[in-house]
Image (cartoon, rainbow, N blue to C red; front, side, top):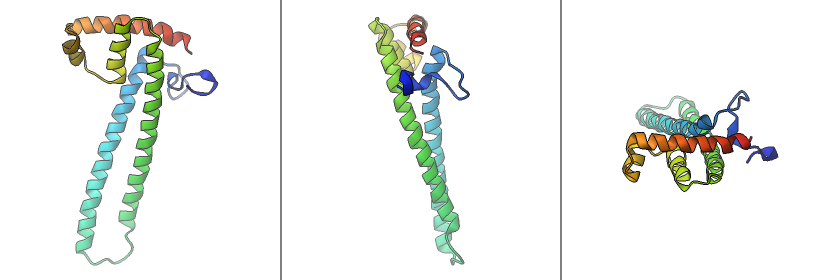
Length: 154
């Protein structure tokens, strides 16, 4: 929960209130952003390793400012990643709290699995024995109930 009892994840940049579906989808968006930053960090670290090997083969003619800049960039990226992970954790906690307010256990389960645990429609279909269309229908019904709770929580 944010200050004043409001949920932190209910407003995206620019102060615009999001729909219930956008609220739940922002979890996956943030997860994707974290994964992209992790890949970027790996790429930078791989380049830094190549630069380090290359520089060790040459006679150093000055400070290691190039390598130091890379280390600084990696540290800044790691700080961003950690902040995003903290935000994702908080948003997931908020989403779980709202989902838990639903009465129907199937609705709770399907929303948690889809939007908090990022399970695919195919996985949900195989796990439940429903067709993908059946899963979509269940998600739609659960989403309508969630929307009611989400709207009241603002």
